[in-house]
Image 1 (spheres, helix red, strand yellow):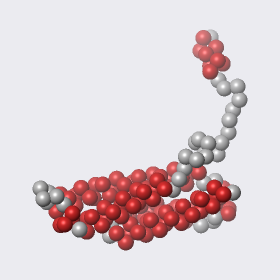
Image 2: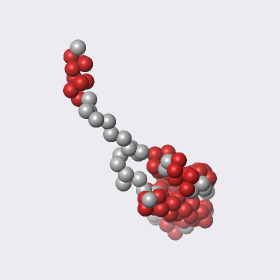
Image 3: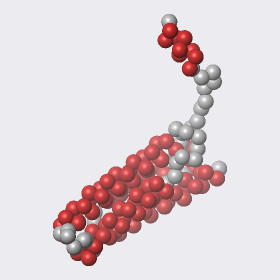
Image 4: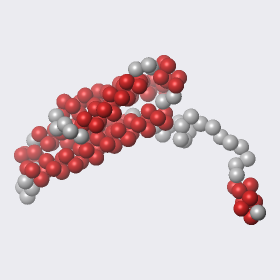
Length: 143
């Protein structure tokens, strides 16, 4: 009985609806881009490990740290892309931009490949895919 009274007291009098978690403005592909830039930067540093490491660190230890950081950042790219894909983009966006599904598929796959690759060209490819998503995202914000 007390529980019902409390529920009635705290229950909103009106239900609000939105197409995303919060009113728009919280999503931005820039988050994925920043992490992808980190992936590429680590790939570059990995390639130059002999000149980038500190005097007290071996090349192997430096490269091991690079790999750990790169994998973490690549996972963050995937997370940011998934949230953008699942929470922001809706069926009308896919109708207008039918390449969206393939673009997100390719970008998240490329982020997964970043965990295996130490080649900065791979990081650049990931950034290119995110740039395409970014372009479409901002076009949808104009509508």
